[in-house]
Amino acid sequence: MYKKIIKCRICNSKDLVLILDLGTQYLTGVFPKTKSEKVVSGPLK
Image 1 (tube, rainbow, N blue to C red):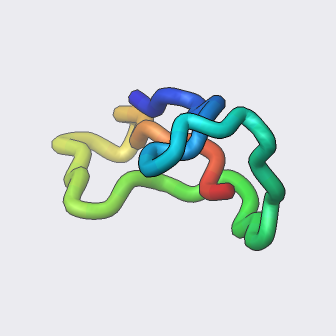
Image 2: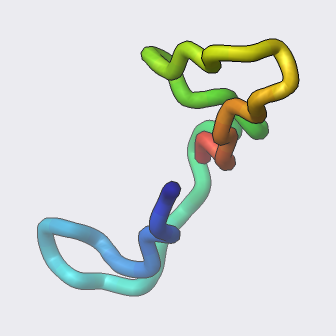
């Protein structure tokens, strides 16, 4: 699960600029018990 950041954590400005986009990534440290079990993924921006 992820939460979109809409403002700066330091100054609370909403004027954010995207500087890196690594696309959709799967969560690390998650080991499904079966091959059919889905692993959660989310955007890594």
